[in-house]
Image (cartoon, rainbow, N blue to C red; front, side, top):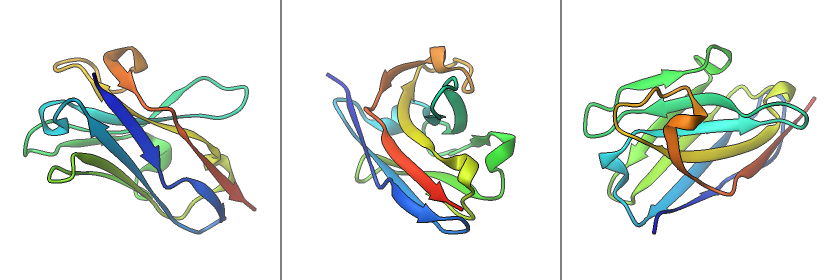
Length: 125
């Protein structure tokens, strides 16, 4: 059974940084595309970033995080990371890690079969 567990969320001031981690069990993350999504209160879940499987490590980012967030994989630890810099109050949301299907469209939540429970990120102004 696949399990994804996020950690690293918290409260930070605008301009600060956080690093989210997603520990996977049950499958090797290097064999699947992995993604981060977020959901703010009253809003739909939205794509944040994704990384391809295997060693190519191709990445894709939502426009609103380009240049500020970096997604990466630690294959030895079977973890996906999201480094978030220059945080803004509008980045406040619950952030979810997800494991995708090979060949699916990365930006769509429906392309991901497994989800973590989420970790809260709150950015104060």
